[in-house]
Image (cartoon, rainbow, N blue to C red; front, side, top):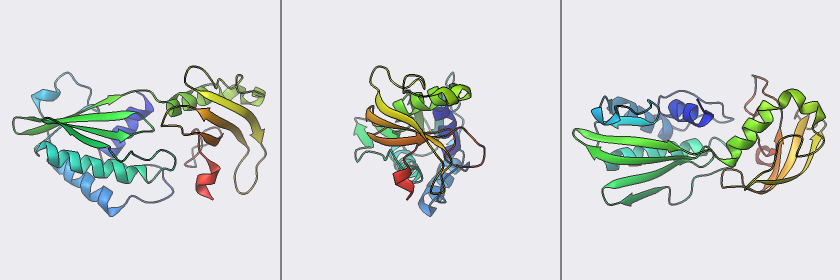
Length: 212
């Protein structure tokens, strides 16, 4: 299962996530309301469990609650905030951008007895970079160029890749500059180090400047 699906399942099951700040009261209250309103529905038959959720609430209510969860969750992780027009209504269907970083977009529509939310998941530049670095991490000692680290390709322009010694409380990191990608990976200087099981940053690109 892709990391995006795991994140979506975590956000909409009340599970905690690694973050330097605790979830807000608005997030926990909105998530609790969504959890309490979940029901089984034939409208989700054949859908992946994490991709389709039915509620005993009207679509507008579900849309506002899930927007609150998405907006508040986006503040827990620096780097890819939700756009101002995250929630849009087209006819009887609500369209919600739930995660820029993980490419999650949800459509919410009415069904008998309430509504369903169906989420589509497209791979983002952030996910591609994360997967490439983690997949090749066993060879990280040989990363002398961006190409050796697997960075680059259509829609992704990266340069100035190099290892930086441990300093200022950070471990040794592989640093690179993103010149062009999608909204999930805005231009800037990023760092990465292998997953260590004990921090919020290991195994994922991040900007040190966001945490000074």
